[in-house]
Amino acid sequence: MKGKEKIHIGKVENIPDGVFTILNLKKYSVGVIRIEEDFKAYLNVCPHAGAPICQGEVSRLVVSDQPFLSYDDSEIKVVRCPWHNYEYDLSTGEGILSDAGKLISIATEEINGELFLLI
Ligand code: FES
Image 1: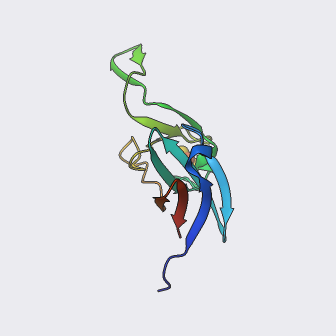
Image 2: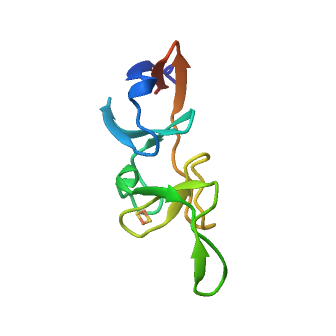
């Protein structure tokens, strides 16, 4: 198996908070996102049926403990798939529903204010 390549993405200050930046790297489409002081990168493919997941809406997880009553004060940030609305926890890539699968994460590394992906 080949070693991973370190790809320079840019200055961390230029990565917006809560919005995916979609990049075409090698043969992959990858979404990079800042979640407060943390950086995540995911393959831009939904594990359910292949939608471009990083084009989905990013929001806080909507929770509900009663019918017809919901609120979004969860600390969990999710991306909602544009095709079938499955949601994925952006801190882990895990699907919120048990059968949703998990996003494929790509390692990130911050060095002196610059962000790199390891692909
Ligand atoms: S393709 Fe993403 S939820 Fe179906």
